[in-house]
Length: 82
Image 1 (cartoon, rainbow, N blue to C red):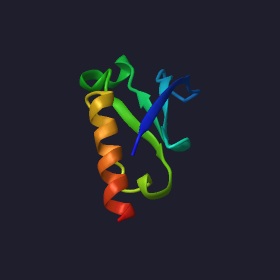
Image 2: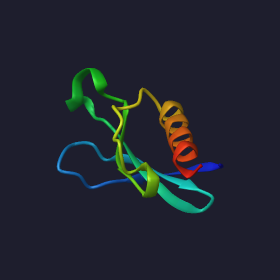
Image 3: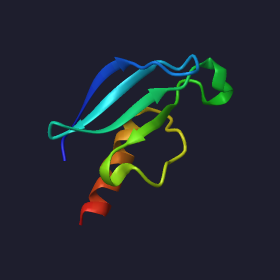
Image 4: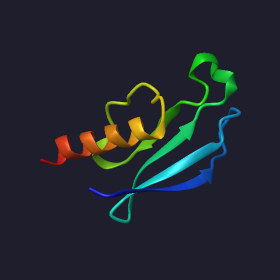
């Protein structure tokens, strides 16, 4: 599965607004948001705001970086679609 990212700003009820749309083969599969300084030790980590299709559940803990997030998305999508 080939994933691509599109940076976006997301309106939230917090100071988190830097996000990434995650596309797989041209389809939107997830929205990730980077956690702001308000989150203390998790500032800069990436949170799965929304997972579509087979990425909707379970919701993982925040990811250290985008590489970890994309690896999880790839693994989960592969496990669930087989």
